Amino acid sequence: MLEIRNVTRRFGKNVAVNGVNLQIQQGQMVGIIGRSGAGKSTLLKTINRLIDPSQGSIVFDGTEVSSLRGPALRRWQRDCAMIFQQFNLVPRLDVLTNVLLGRLNHRSTALNLLSIFSREERIRAIAALERLDIARTALQPAGTLSGGQQQRVAIARALMQEPKLILADEPIASLDPLNAKVVMDALRDINLRDGITVITNLHTLDTARTYCNRIIGMQGGAVVFDGAPEDLTIEAVRLVYGADADGTEISEAITSTSIRPVKVRAPVSAAPLEPAYAPA
Ligand SMILES: Nc1ncnc2c1ncn2[C@@H]1O[C@H](COP(=O)(O)OP(=O)(O)OP(=O)(O)O)[C@@H](O)[C@H]1O
Ligand SMILES: [Mg+2]
Figure (tube, rainbow, N blue to C red):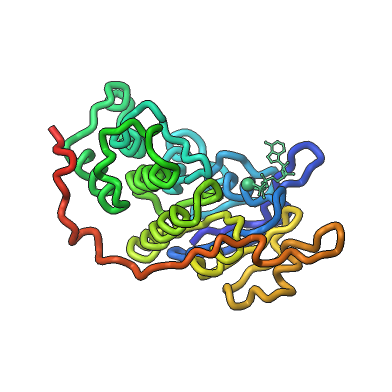
């Protein structure tokens, strides 16, 4: 279980995250919603320790992660993989190498310096690409892929970390509705079949409703809603998003890309490895 205990993060006088308390059971799929500047990204980054809290603590399975240093901190950052809106791939490296980079924190510095990946690691990387249905792109430079494909590469790279949590910061904000659906379906599939907790910031309400079993609404750095999608009433939405300056309410249509889910496919372990790329 992930526990966020009274976490506050200030930037100068600006309070980005304000006294947040959350308990997130392993295996939940959590969507964080809220207006721009509500503190969603800051909260995610404090979990992963890309940003340190000014106050409060973060505890995972009884270990205080907010005070970890050195190798223990790197192990924690391996346990919670980050996915970003802009994918953060190395565009000139091929897709397979980008995915293998997810193994770096599992290996010795010498192996990393020499960029030596084992046959087992490469097979695992291809299996991750297969799972996301992009194995055929394995040898292409990552920068030549479409946005939706690049985000799937980023998810495959995250899987290579063998994470316990995936933290996704607006993973579909740069994608068209079709690619957004493919990426959200992939995250849900990973959540359901691998039991990996997924915490994702989302800018569209209906995506959060469709995919998440828990929705957290933030406003001014604080949590103002925490409940199941069916509890997110129009009053709750108003609390999270407020009303526009001219008095008109934020309508669900404004924050909507109208994507629909599909049923989860058969387990990947049953899927054969396509010989799209044969490891040496
Ligand atoms: N590195 C930083 N330095 C100074 N202020 C920051 C920094 N990062 C965030 N902030 C401020 O903290 C507040 C919360 O920002 P944050 O990026 O967490 O919001 P958000 O909910 O993710 O917004 P968006 O939907 O636009 O991504 C904002 O007022 C922002 O300007
Ligand atoms: Mg953000």
